[in-house]
Image (cartoon, rainbow, N blue to C red; front, side, top):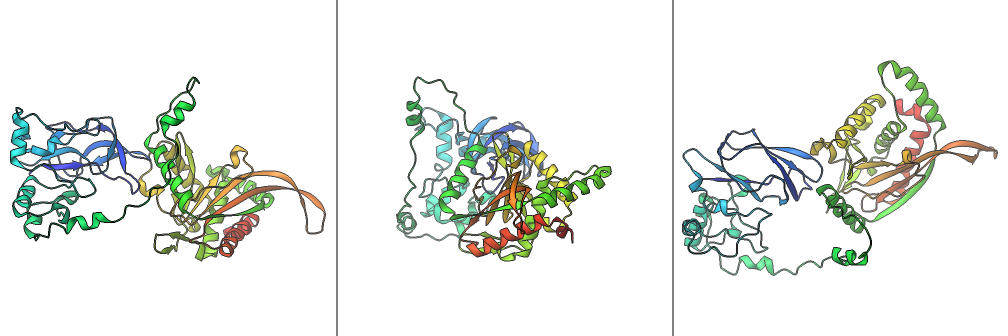
Length: 432
């Protein structure tokens, strides 16, 4: 029986992608593990492997197609002894770029054969397609079964003959019951793109098309700002001891080709602080809070057209030189969009450093499900009043901790920020 190859979800946040390149052609034989295509997700371009063996019977989505929804059929795989004539309704699935015809003319023999061999592809109550084999659809129609109530056991949840035979007929009114639920009230939308464009009629501008990454950033951060109850804690940190210690270490490590940055110390300080204040090492999980044991720290990396937040796992256990090397590797591959999903997902805490751009201070948006994010500004020379009342000059860095109030309360957030300050102002203690 022909098997549909579906657009895969290559990351938990992926809803659609671009089929950048096919690595196989129709008629080619593939085995499990063979590369089928290159798919551009919201974060990276990744290779997609076959999970079954067979012959590529038909490619349904053309190379370069954008906005291909996850679980959309993109190709059909044939088993031994099958031919393109066995594809039937699978080949009739339109690509996202081509709308499905409203009704095929009766004079077309191919459409007539397909219609005779199996009922049209059914859809669930919410309009999404139900994936089932032609034989399963015929048996379901004969027995009066609603396919939306049957759970598929085939590849990617496809309903097969055995699933239908095991199902029992249900009252006709049973299936629509859940659909009668009151729909959620949509959040107020801003002006449409056409409305905005009309405001600038007669003015010269360039229209920049949004890629998958920019669309995802816009959606996720809008959601975060609207649904995560942020509050902000601010502190100034004296960096003179850290800068002196960093200079000494870099001089000693120069023969090994190691050069530590201030950001490496910040990562270490935050990782240790999460161990010192373990209740703050947590994430929001919908109806519960997950309190993590290791310190997995994400660091924002700006790339062309967006950003990544690669995660340094077990950062509290790693030396400064190891953190520095790992961060350089992750940042380099992030800029090339070569990170695997597990390298930029997870973590409980993030760091966003704009100090190298001369920014004194700013408020960062939490990246769910993280419990907090530290916004780091530039270290600048400022006059300070010492304990003895005398005015002195020190290198001071301003930081802002954005906190999810569902996970971390004010006093707990203050303890976490105090631990970060103490670690950075006493850098020798971080090596103890």
